[in-house]
Length: 297
Image 1: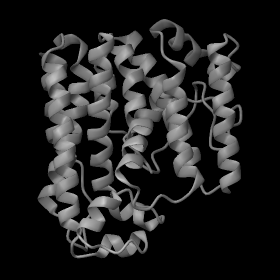
Image 2 (image 1 turned 30 degrees about the vertical axis):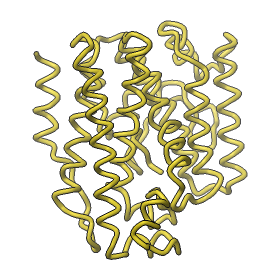
Image 3 (image 1 turned 45 degrees about the vertical axis):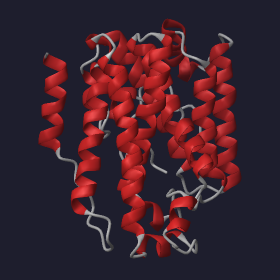
């Protein structure tokens, strides 16, 4: 799905080194890749070196997400993601493709881990391989770890957090953001034949696991969504506990990310989950206040 990483359809204009949809050698502007995202404000307040590294990581995440969500045949999507695995391996071997030279510099500068890049690609491969519908809880958690918490693990190294605290923050905040995305995107996902709501919750409410559009229209769906929202809030609370115990300067960006996504989750709950559902609009003024709070103080 268009994960915590990006909104579907946001434009990506290229100067930095990442491949486009068919994984060719076009160059990409990492800053431009973030400009339509909910993370842009959080990245902008970082010191220049950290900001540039985050833009590079985000551009990588966006590039592989675009492959997974493309209309290419599944075999071509798989091949594109395999190409990315090889390119990441080349970066860690000190032989990056020319278009990934900047990303390779950030890998070395912040000791970013190969496994986290591969986990992100593996998550995108889950979407590329099939239309996910009602995964069980274990599969959903694995998906969230790969497409969201892996990006968090890369990010906390750039923020300079201590290893254990950073990994715990990435675990919980990544899942909180991804569950928020799932609740926000129920109808958009159903339109492309996907449903990320967990099988156990759907079965508990006796919702037939027929197809995503039928699930999205079921009158019992709001109870499923309420439970999933509780899970998201639990992960937000665990992330808050880590950030409360961490030096304020190191967690300004994740504080903004957390606050922005809580705005989205609050808006979803205020709207409700009964069909038909109106699209959720970002509460931009509130998000700007959150960014200002952590950027300036």
